[in-house]
Image 1 (cartoon, rainbow, N blue to C red):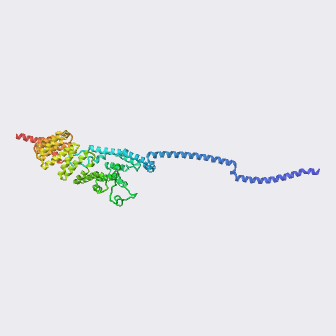
Image 2 (image 1 turned 120 degrees about the vertical axis):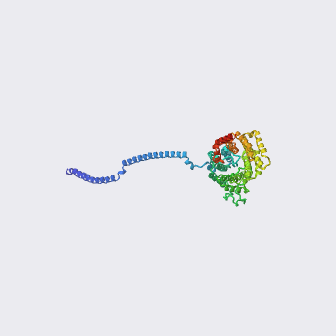
Image 3 (image 1 turned 90 degrees about the horizontal axis):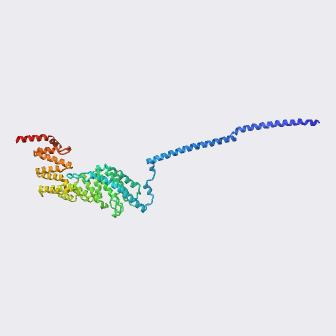
Length: 505
C-alpha cells in the first residue's frame, strides 16, 4: 500500500523535470529562430511577392515611357525627312541618274534610245531656243549702209537681255538625266557655252569651252598626254581631234569648241589670244576641213575688230560659205567691198559692190551697192556724173526700189554737190525729204544740207524752212553749234534779207 501511494510523487517529479528541460531547450530554439528571422527577412514569401510586383510595374512603366519616346522620335524623324526631301538637301545622298546608268551595260538598244532622246529632244529644243534669241536680235538691228557695217547683224547687248534658263535646263538635263556614254554629251556642253557667250557671261563660257577642250581630247590607252604632244602614236604635233570623215559619224565638237573659244576671246576684248588660237588651228594639218569656213569667218572677225581691214576682207571671202542665209552672205559681200574701199583698193571694192548688188535679197543692199559703184565710176571719170545720176534715177522705175526713193535722191544730190551742181542738188534734196517717211536720220542729214546750201547761196527763205524742220539734233552731230545758232536766228536773218530786198527794189 505504501509503494502504491508513492507513484504519483514520482510522476510529478518526472513531469517537472521534463518541463524544465523542455523550457530550457525551447528558449534556446526561440532565440536562434528570432535571430534567423531578422537576418532572412528578405527571403520571406511576402517580401518576394512585393518585390516581384514592384519590378513588374516598373518594367511596365519603363516600357510605356520608352514607347512614347520612340514614337515621338519616329514622328520627329519623319517630319525632318519630309522637310529635307522638300528642300532637296537629301538628294545629295542619292545617286544621280547618270551615275546609276553607268553601272548598266550599254547595249545597242540603250545606245539608240539615249542618242535619239538627247539629239531630238533636249539638244534640238535648246538649239531652237538659242536661234530664237539671235533672230529676235537680228529683227531689231538696223544697218547704216553709209557707214562701215558691223560684222554681225545682231548685237550681244540685245541677246544678253533674253533669258537662257530654258537652254541651261535642257543642256543640264541632257547631261545629268542621261547616260554619259551618249554621243551628244559634248554637244550639250557646247550648247551651254554658246548660250553663256550670247548672254555675255564670257568667263563662264570660257570655263565650259576649256572643259570641252581637255575632257574630250582623245587619249591613247588611257594615257593623259599633254594636248599637242608629239608623243602620240602619229608623232605629229596637233591640237585637233582626228576625224575619219564618215558621213554617219557623230562629229566630236571639241574642234568646233576651239573656234568658239576664239570668238569668246574676241567678245571679251582679248583679240591677240583669239587670233593666235585661230592661226594655230589654221596651220594644224589635223584640223578638219569642214570647219575651215567657220575658222576663216572668226579670223575675219578678229582682224575686223583689230582694224586690220585688208586681212579681214581676205579671210571673210574664204568664210562666206559659212553664212547662215542669203541675206547674211549679201551683207558680208557688201562689207568686203567696204573693207577694201577703206584700204583704198578701189578696183576690188567695185567688184565686190557689184557682187553684193547681184545676190542681194534685200533691195537696200542693191541700192547702196549701185550708189557706191556710181560714186567710184564718177571718181574714175569713166562716165559723167549726170549719166551716173540718171542711172540711179532709172532704178526708181522698178517697184522694188520705190520704197528707197529717199535714199536714191539723197545720193544723187551728193553726186551733184561733188560736181558743184548746186541747183540740182537742191532739187534732189527736196525730193529726198518729200519721199522720206520713216528714215529720220537720213531726213535730218538732208535738211541740214538743204539749209546749208541755201544759207550759203543767200536763199534764206528756203534755209529758214529747212532749219525750222530740224528737231532733236544730237550734240555730237557735226557743226551742232553752227546749226543751232542758224536755226535760232533764221527768222531775223530772213526778215532783214526781205527788208533789204524791198529797199533795193
